[in-house]
Length: 62
Image 1 (spheres, rainbow, N blue to C red):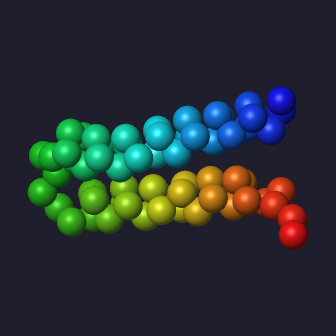
Image 2 (cartoon, helix red, strand yellow):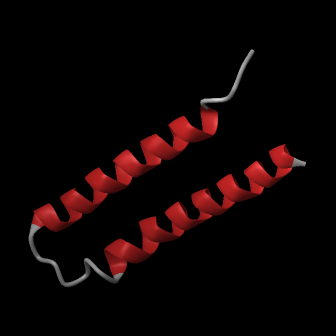
């Protein structure tokens, strides 16, 4: 039961990340003319995704 709940939670996290990857650049960063606005977002977003993947897979065993 706990394993199923964790799966639902991680599916929600992935869904939120995917939505943010589409929404933020086309809404919040739409008026930013400088390249470093997008660069900062994608750098932070990439780090968040790396941490999320690490957290999802840290309990995997052979």
